[in-house]
Amino acid sequence: MATLDKDSELRIGVFVCDCGLNIAGAVDCGAVCEYAETLDDVVCVVRNKYTCADPGQNEIKHAVREHRLNRVVVASCTPRQHEPTFRQCVLEAGLNPYLMEMANLREHCSWVHPGDWDGATAKAKDLVASAVGRARFLEEQVEMAVPVTRRALVIGGGVAGIEAALELAEQGHQVTLVEKQASIGGIMAQLDKTYPTMDCSI
Image (tube, rainbow, N blue to C red; front, side, top):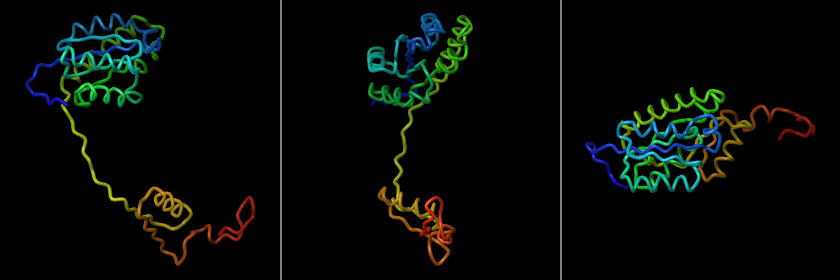
């Protein structure tokens, strides 16, 4: 993965997704692309029917290499759904995955303005411009690797504590169960019969 020089020229690629008719049915995606081409530092604009699909991701990878992009803006659906997808995509293209920004044209625009073609399109342009603006300030990030001690302390030997201890143990953790009473089981152990079978609780 290439490391960016802080003084290197910004080269931003914008990828506008139709999302079938989810976005294109309420937004003039062609006009959004034309507008994106006028934004400072944008050197590449690509429109795709489904950017999250393999052909769409391949277009991003190809554009990153062909246009030497060092920032990527994906204007599509919610980051909650596909941010990991596009982070992995730009990583495979040779960019740090944190040099990617998303503009949510579906949930924040087309789905909430289905009957306002001009208004939805204008809002989509604003969202793309904002994402490009944010992309200018993105910096490479490195995820920390933190060692995890595979031991757990469960306080309370009632039914919930016992179940938690068993689940953790099954996942390979060394478990210490602490209970202040002389025996485990909590209130359940004090019951004579339990519904619906009326069997002994122990």
